[in-house]
Length: 444
Image (cartoon, rainbow, N blue to C red):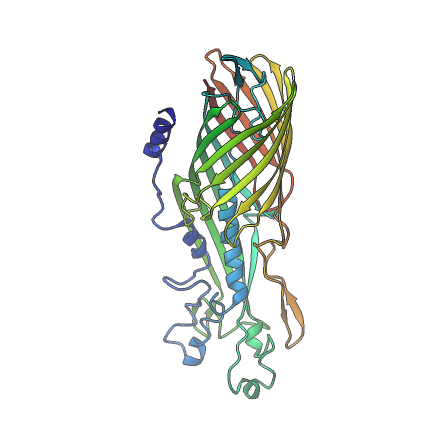
């Protein structure tokens, strides 16, 4: 009944999406500089008042014509969606844990437990742990590059047609023949992405050594973006590629601003932890955690794919000091995110009967070559050989290494107040400077 009431409350208070259209579409709008047109479509070039020979060049940068341009836009969009869906959920249990021996409750922990890492202790048969937390973060970098200073270079389609070699006096299968294929659109992009995750969690001690639980996140996302694009003609002003104007007076600059927000239920997690063995001071357990694709992928509220992790957990307790280590594997469906090997090590130390310090080093190391890839630099062969870097974002692994630092404060009523921060220690993926979390926990 307690679990049903909690879940009902969550669904009743969950806000609906506030975006008129998906936030993924908002990202795509940053590359549209003509009303109702495709990304990188040159509305000025397509003006019917221009000569037909000029109008024909309006589609030479659109993603459907240039695979590298499509890949750049898809990379940016998918990186944002994957990172928001991967916001960590707090540990499955907290507070003092018990098991029953001959019908008498026997305490199995004295520490209030970790915040992010998992400990091996289970709650004890019939016991319940509930929590509510709010996490706030602002994404600031993508693979180490500032989100407010991203550079993308979009290149021209490699056009070939019957008679092209004769008309232009060269092999049209080469990038750069005709010469106008050397034109580039340089785009400077600034993104501001705020995320708030409100997570409700319930864990129930089904048996002394078996806990089951559910975590329901409510995600709110706010997006603002500014793009400034410039057609860079090869060797001087162009009469073929421009955003507005005429061939005689082309406008080579364009900009776009978008903003939007969305909120709703994220990817719900179902969890089970099983105690395997224990001694006087150490314990071993396994945990399975499944995340279901309940959040809207189009609004960056969820990943759009099922994911599951399995962990082996070792913990030891010596009075007010408790340490833990977690090692496991994260499986993700879909073509946009890699599986990962998981490793966490940390401890929690009672500073006073009412205050505990919790520290964790958390890592997520991707398996295999990254599915989120940047297109290789483009080589232009004529009129001379040169290489164009397509973006300032590097091609690299999206390994995640974070440090978690937090405190737990136990009140006289048995309610535990949680304050935590997560600090990135490397540059993989889309990252904030810090993620702050405040929450309340109660077990009975």
